[in-house]
Image (cartoon, rainbow, N blue to C red; front, top):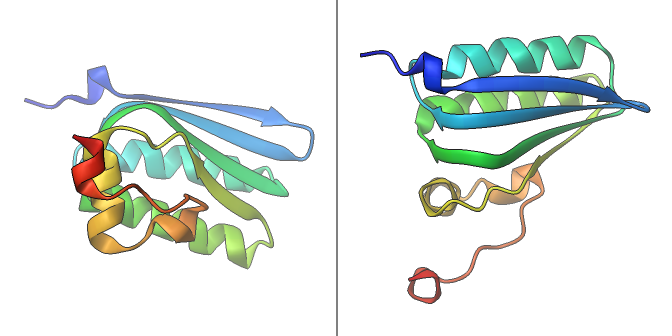
Length: 116
């Protein structure tokens, strides 16, 4: 069963920037939707692109790949790229295991024992 209906992205433009809010689980089924939204945001030539993960409950390696591609595209376009509010334990774990949190402007996570 495809969970795309439970997933959504919203983009808003700010003064010189773009914010993409993501809701739901990012996985193989939904990462293409995120990818298209991020491309649309980058097409607006923002000085800064922020991806708001406040309502993301899960992100797998396909989502991470999408974020890494967007981060590289932003860098090529001389735009800064940050990931904000990546607080869900399942999301933090992905960045901990892959060591990629600093690429997205995330502070070092707490030790796993401290999160329980």
